[in-house]
Image (cartoon, rainbow, N blue to C red; front, top):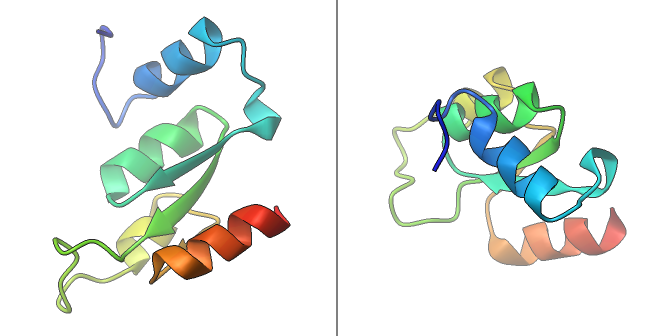
Length: 86
């Protein structure tokens, strides 16, 4: 548990610290603007994903870009390829 929920970065910073991870070697995968904002404000690279069933055609992927997503992927296969290349 953390004191402040998303869009504050507390949850991501807690995971980073408790697992001795490096910010510049971590990628967060998010499907919401609030989650992207939390990861971005923690100083972590964030990729957006729009492949889930909850992501419907009327949602604008700019929600993710506007909150700091470095890139957005429409399929898990494209995300996997990007992760391999990162």
